[in-house]
Structure formats: structure tokens, C-alpha cells
Length: 305
Length: 305
Image 1 (cartoon, chains in turn orange, brown):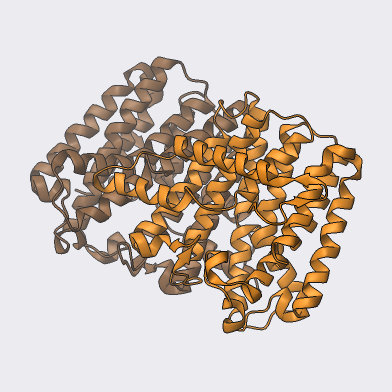
Image 2 (image 1 turned 90 degrees about the vertical axis):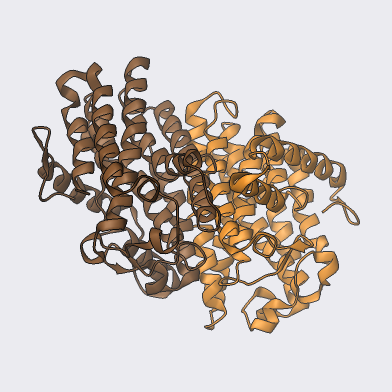
């Protein structure tokens, strides 16, 4: 994710992204089972293949940045961000399956089911999900059990039928039926937005945020999720597969309703910019401490410009 | 599960099973999203199809019975048992998929993917899993956050790569390679035993058991898991599909190593009886309070006699 445009809103995000991405890789390496001979070693190998080395680690970045508003130690928010990344990775593996989106390339490599077969790819997802909850409920992650339980609860809701899975169900339906703009917005809010919202809320939970602070972060997360999704749609519409790291132009080929197909490229980009500014505006309550999150919102738009 | 032989070891299990089964159905009905029109309503319908009305509810029965050793209120252990049942149901849905065990019938009905398609069946499993963790981390389930977090941790380990998923990976391997008895034992311990062990441990966690009590329950659970698996193998080898509620004789057709294929039917049944007695013996520390769990161990054997 770092690179051109990594300086946004006066904050240089490139260093921070690189540092957090390295730390997440290290944390994943520690919590994932060791690859080795035999069927269980092969499962571990596939779990590592699908999660390590690759991915922007936007979600851990968000947890760390949101936690940073409340001076949460980075080691703590990194473990929570790693749990979110496990859930995110599992969802990509299952989304890529032939009976789902049927994507053969992910993060510039063969998708997990292409590299390891369908059965193992399903099981990799099935193993990554509980590992996320194991990590969140670990006393090493946080000494306060109430915080651990609150994190588990939030992530469980974000990952389930009222969150990510509900969004994927709508996404599959979008290929065979016309969805109105309201339903497309709901799709994106569930599929991508719910987990992004949890990342911000995790910072608030870890930081024992005041109600007003927690609401401000939730409003920011809501808009950021939409920005992120429009940017993703723009990359699909305009990007090339090599730099995006996965197949592109899929939405148009499938006749899938997206913000870009509904608004057109230019209006979608305008809308993303408007939403990024709106997202940044919600952070007023945090003063200059909110600069990283403000910069992130603008950075997500620029990524697709 | 109740019926003939439901009286074992002087304890009548039929009533208790019927009562707990009804209570689990009611709890599932409350925690599952409502079926309805649209893609999300269809997901909910499939989640209900795959979890409600059917299943022996052995695992909730175990949680309630283990909790009963420590006078844990049944309403509390039932909610925890319901969470375990969500995990168990998800695992059956994914195990039945064409790329896994390819089973078209489950609990006497078309399997979830036959009734709702592969994509939705995968997503049903993906939605049931976080719902289990949502339930365990809910303050309504238990007021003590340390207990909630400990339950989440235990279930996450039992469901993951070092538990159920690890067992399923070995199970898939068993179809294409010869496993030695040690590996078959490991397979069963992970695939079925880990979740059964968690059920007993959940009772200990809820009941703030002493270390010696917790160890005794763990020893019981270990043997019970093996008994259960041998009984399942015997039903596959000797049962008919109508009464078992799923396809039978599959292990032999696939040349899959099981206790029955390795020991023969008679020796396997003897071994199951020996293990059931051994399981019951571990409960001495609980005196007469252990009668239900003792009866259950014998009942599981008789089910396949």
C-alpha cells in the first residue's frame, strides 16, 4: 500500500504501513501452526501461504491507529489487528472458491484453492476463523477479561450473518439479480464495512473510550468503509491485474451492480473524495491525534486515482 | 437418541435427552436470524434448516451433565451447549460438501448443499461459527467475563487446526493413504474428541472446578470420545441408512481405516465397552453425582449394539 501518494494530509503513512505490515507478518508467523510433513503440516503450510507475505494490512493499521488515539500500547492493538487479519484472510479464501467468485489469482499468486485444492482451501478458512477468536481470548492479548470478551463479541458480529457473511450472500445475489442502490450500499456495508468498523471499535474498546469518542470513531469507520469500497470498485474498473494483484474488470463482465457501474467512474471518484473528507471531519473530537486516521481516509481515495 | 436402551446404569436418559433437545431447539430458534425474503432471509433459512429439528444434541447434553456436577444452572450450560451445537452443525455442513465427504443425506434429509447449493452451504457454515463465539461472549450467557473468555478460548482451540479441522484434514487423507493405528486414533481424537472434551471442560469452567475434578472430567471425555467414534464406526458398518439418518457403509467403500476396519466388528464392540467402563471409572471423585455421565458412556455403546 505505501508508495506514491503515501503522504496524505501532511502525514507520511508509508513508514507506518511498512512497520505495521512487518509486525503483522511476524505475529502471524508466531500464531500459525508450523508447516511440515503429513496432512496437518500441509494444512499449516496452506494457512501460511494464504495469510503471510501479501496484503496491505489495512485492518491492523486501522486497529493500531484507532488504539493510538487512546495511547493503547501498539503491541496490544497489533495482536487484535492480527486477529482481524486472520478473519479477513479466511474470507478471501472462501470468496475465491469456484462456487463463489471463482478467482484464480489473489495477491498476485494462485488463490489458495488453486495451490492446495478446494477441500484444503475450505479447511484453511475454517481453521483461520477460530484462531482469530483464540487470539482475542488469550490473556497475553489483554489482561482484562471484559476487554477480551468485548473484542470477541464485536469481531463475531462483524464476521457473521449480520456482517461479512451477510454481505457475501448479497454479493452472490448481485450477479443474478438487479439490486437497487440501497441494497448495494447495504452489501458493501456488510461485506467490507463491518470488519473495518470493528477495527476502529477495537481501538475504542482497548482504549476505554468515552461514548462520544466511540460514536465519532464509528461515524468515521462507516464513511471509510464506503470510501474503501468505491476505491476497490474503481481499481476493478480501471486498474491492471499486475499492479492490483488479482483479476480486474470482473464486475463489469459479470454485470454486477457497484457504485462505479451505477454512478460512472468520475462521479464515483468525486463521491469517494467527498466521503473521505466527511470521514476525516468526524474526528474533530480527537484534535491532532486524529491526523493519521484522517490521512488514511484520503490515502485510500488516492490509491485509486 | 432416546428410545430402547435409554435406561443405562440405573439412570433413565430418555427424559433428560428429550428435555435438553427441546431446549436446544428453542435456544437455536432464538439466536438464529429470522428466515425471510431476499438473500439474507434465504441464508437464515438455510442456517435454520441445517441446525434445527434433528441431531441427537449429545454435546449440549454433555455440557449440561458436566455442569450438573457443580450445580451450574441448566439455563447457563444450555446456552454454552447451544454454542457447541452451532460449531458441530457447521462442521457437518462443510464435511458433507462435494469436495469433502460428498454426502447427500444428513439427519434423514438432503444435506445443506443439496437443498441450498454449495455456495450458500459454505456461507451457512461460515455464519454459524462466529455465532457460536458471539453466544459465548454474550453477558447474558455468563456475568463473569473471565468465564466467557475461557469458554471462547476452549471452543476456539477445539474447533481449529489443533482440533476438529485438524481431524478433518487427517480424515480426508485417510481416503488416499494408509494410516497407522496411532494416526487413526489421533484423527478421531481431533475430529470428534476435541469438541466432546470441550463440552466436559465447559462444565468444569462454568462450575469453577478444582484441578483434580477438571482432570477427572478430561480423562472421562477422552475415553467417551473414543467410545463415541467406535460406536459411529459400528453404525456405519452395520446400520441401515433409514435408522442412522445418513449414508452408511461409506468407510468400507472408501477403504478408509477405522477402528472397525482395523479390529473387526466384535473386537471393536468389546473395545468400546471396555472404554465406556474405563470412562465411567474416572468419575469416582464425583460419587453419585457422576451417575448421568456414567450412564451416558454406556448408552453410547448400546446405541451401536
